[in-house]
Image (cartoon, rainbow, N blue to C red; front, side, top):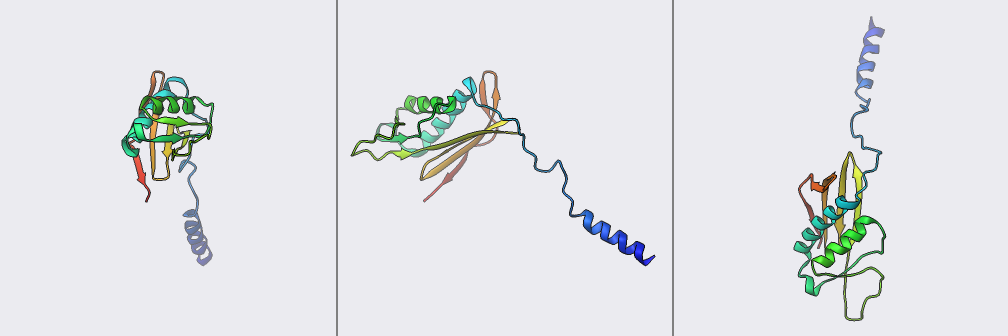
Amino acid sequence: MRKLFTFILATAVLSGCQTADDGLNTSSTPVAATGPAASAIAGDMASRLAEQIGPAGTTTIKMEKDKSEFATALEAALKGWGYAVITDGNVGKDVKPVELAYWIDGVDGQVLARLSTPSIALGRAYTATPAGAVPASPLSIMQRN
């Protein structure tokens, strides 16, 4: 009887250490932000960035050269807001550009987008639709000092 009680107690304690398979799963199927979705996400993120980094006529943005649809759409959206965008690394002597890093990826059927400068980072989740994309989360803003 004593061995049975010890066995049941050990089983109960060890069963608490098991993890469920349906815990923190993420989709391994990539969700590409292409075409209308890339444009919609880039437009929304560019407008949110414009609210945070200052007036367009005085700010130059430096991005890495990239041929992806999102990068092209983001560059066009920033130019549409009036920003000068540099992608070739050639910066004039008197120009101090704001360096912009961007990241976009698909997780669990949504598209996660992030824009980051030395002073601020913006992030948001989107749901891609055939006509574009709609925000699926509030805008996340992280300010750095």
